[in-house]
Structure formats: structure tokens, C-alpha cells
Amino acid sequence: MVTLFILVAFLFAAFYFLPTILAYLRKKSNLVAIFVMNLLLGWLFVGWVIALIWALSNDSPTTIVIHSGKEDR
Image (cartoon, rainbow, N blue to C red; front, side, top):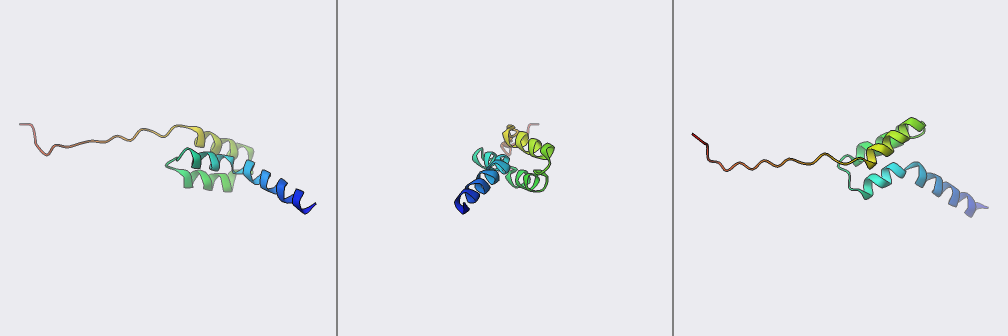
């Protein structure tokens, strides 16, 4: 009986933190923010869905600017 309870609790926790798990696996730059939102607002269905969408969205591409040090005159 205790083993079943532990298994059910683990499965519930894995489902509850699914947005955080997906963000971790996708190496999201804002993993901590997704975790905090999932932790604090995940009990609301809307908060959980927003965290899930955030975890599945693409990060904006990083723009790298290379300056040669020479100025055009």
C-alpha cells in the first residue's frame, strides 16, 4: 500500500512539474523562472498551461555583434 502511494505521488509530481522537466531537457535560458511559475501557479490550471507553453516555446536567437575596432570615415 505504501509503495502504491509513493508511486502515485511520484507520478503526480512528475506530471505537475512537467513544464519544468521539459524546460530542463530543452536547456531553456529561463529555466528558473519557469520553475518558479510552475511551483507557485501550477496548481491553477491556467498557470500550469502557461508554464508548459513557455517551456515548449523557442528561445529568441542570440545576436552577436562583432566590432573590428576600425571606424569608417
